[in-house]
Image (cartoon, rainbow, N blue to C red; front, side):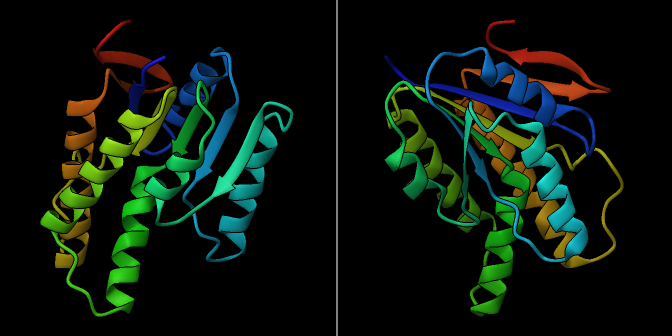
Length: 182
């Protein structure tokens, strides 16, 4: 079995995670949910618990990892499905940790991380489904940090989409097939 890469993107609350989960659950094999969301406050903790409750624990094994997605993908069983939810928070985490370490994180740094992620995902004999927000369709942010974040997400989505076998944009709960099989 070779690798299959799928990118599911859309706006906030568009239904992209629900679509990605339903898509993954019809594929045979071990199911891994790679969660990138850090617990930062009680509201976020409640969101995480709701998401966990929405997944069948008998189907899904949850792995929480904020930064090193490549390391996790290396450990996955062959013929398994890994749903990475989400790249948007992964990028946020990378920016946060770079700032705390006084490391200048820019589009070149992000490009390198995204390309390493794709290389490892292609080595996985199974399906990887990436979930990411489409953040570039709104107004231009009024501050440099927010513009950098928007640019990093946009760049990463482009890199993942170019490498993906399928790209699906979810809007209002409806999947729009941009690339690959429908």
